[in-house]
Image (tube, one colour):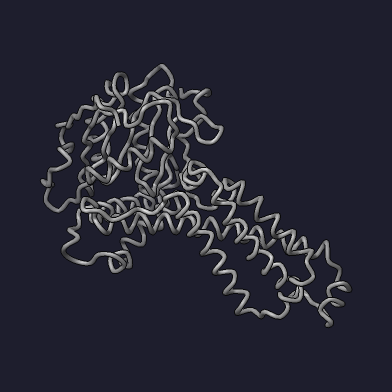
Length: 388
C-alpha cells in the first residue's frame, strides 16, 4: 500500500462519504468506491466521481448511488492485474463499499492479453487502465467504461442491446439485483436473518446466480493447464489398466457416483485451499457479504470443475471405445459387454483423473486460478487496438 496515499470524499449529489448512513426515503444505497492512482488517474477521477454518480442515479433511480473517491496507488509497480484486484477488494471490505472501481495508469494484462478493463464480479471489483483507453477523449471513455464495469459487477452483460421487451426485462432484473445488493450490504448482522438463512431467500439467490453467470465458470477448465495435463495422464493410464476394467464393472452406479462426487469436491477444495480463495469473517465484514462472496467463489469453481469433469468423461469414453475392443473387454470381464460397461469404465477413469487433476491444480499459479474466475466483457479490448 502506498505510504503517500491521500483520501478525497466527493461531495457531489448522491456521492457522500462512505460512512454516511443518510439516504433518500425508501431508496437503498450503493457505494461504488473509486480508487485512483496519483497523478493522471487522480485528475481524471476527480471529475469522473460526480459524473459517474449522476449517470448511475439517472440510469438506476431505484437505488441511491454514492461514489466516494480515494487517491491511492494500492500496489507498488510492477504488479499483476490480480494483485490490483486483491488490493482493491481489501479496501472495499475495509470501507464497507458495495462495489469498487480502481483507476490506474498501469497497463493491464490478463494471461497474454493486454486489456482496457478487467472485472471480478465475485470480488465486486473492476480495474480500468487509462493507457488502454487511448490518448483522446480520455474522460468520456473512462466514464462509459466505468458504467460498463458496474454492469458487469452486478451480473449484467455490459453494452448488450436487445429489443424493447427483452431490454426492459434485463433492466428490471438488474435493478432488482441492485436493490438486493444494497439490502445485503446494509443489513445489520446482529438483527434479522443471516448466514444460510439469508442466502436461501430468493433475492440473495438471484444475486448469487447473476454473479456466477457473469464469471462464466466454464472458462476455468481452459485456464487450468497443469491440472488438465495431470488429469489426462491419469485417464490414459486408467484406460489401459485391465484391473480398473474389472473394478469399474463391479462397483455399480451408486459407488461410481459417490467416487465422482468425492473427486469433484476434492478438486474444488484443493483449488480453494491451495490458492487462498476463501474469505474469512472479520469484525468489519458483514456475515452475509462474506457468505455471498464465498458462495459465489464456490459455485464458480464447482461449475468450472463440472465442465472439466464432463469434458474428461467424453474423452475417456471415446478413448475406451477406440482402444478397447468389445472382445478384449468381454474376455477380461468374463461376460458380454455393452455400452454401460464402457460408460462405467469412463466414469471411473474420469473420477481418478479428477483426483490427479486436483493434485496438478495445486501446482497452478494463484494468478491463473483467480483469473479463471474473472469475467471479460466488451470493455476488455486489446489496448493496442485503442478505443475510438
